[in-house]
Length: 339
Ligand SMILES: NC(=O)c1ccc[n+]([C@@H]2O[C@H](COP(=O)([O-])OP(=O)(O)OC[C@H]3O[C@@H](n4cnc5c(N)ncnc54)[C@H](O)[C@@H]3O)[C@@H](O)[C@H]2O)c1
Image (cartoon, rainbow, N blue to C red; front, side):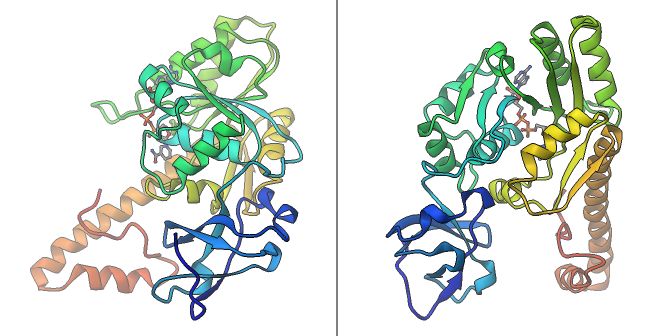
């Protein structure tokens, strides 16, 4: 537990916005998490009026604008205007963070995985990946009854307003994405459609995969069931996944029907202040592919420069740092050797 140090004061912002804030006013000694440079540290806040909260940050002079406070207990989280029932397929990296964060926003989440070991661990509140803040949020949302884990697909489908597909899409030996897990999920959903469903790709998939999913489900489910397939790619980074989900640069919604668009906007708009890009399904799929390709190109580029630096006796880190200060280039993904 960090203790306040008067000389190190920081202004705190609370996220997600849905946790703001009347219930904080006047409460004393709330346990919170102070985030700095991606690390979470527990702090205590006395008599917090959080709309203009100041907290004392222990440590080595980190500036105020790097500080973010987050409430540890979500028991009294203000529900979003539209609290939805969400089914999540796949509780690996992307699926678990998505599940826990959407529960934290006030939605009811049923997360399904075919791996019984993972489901058993998560059901006991034991995280299967290391991400700052994830264990605390998982425990709090299990306690609040907003999240549960299952191996039974029907539990994640029945009664869900939206089903997120977060299964793996690893590269095959020829470099193409292996869509076997996605196909299995599509087949499973097709067999259990029980009224309109919005099926959302969060997995990273090639452009036009949604068309193929639609075709697969339609072929197996028959013409009478209503459903849409939308794309909502995930841009989180391992190591800062909770932060990235809760404070994204942008949210991309790819939907080809008004119904699907509205559902996803209802899910995200009340809880996030970042730009929301609404586009066609194929465009959204391709945005994610383009982002990945660009980041890979950046890493490849700095590695080529690293070879030249070595030949010239120049420090590649100095070169990378200096070019990264140009906002047109940006400092991220310029570490030679990674990739
Ligand atoms: N890991 C990241 O940082 C990250 C970031 C952005 C996007 N993504 C994308 O998200 C997707 C998932 O990535 P990940 O890293 O979470 O993968 P992962 O391999 O960690 O997790 C996939 C999970 O899906 C489960 N699964 C497999 N088949 C299933 C089925 N039929 N039904 C239910 N569950 C099933 C597996 O047991 C596993 O737990 C990928 O497309 C990836 O490219 C990942």
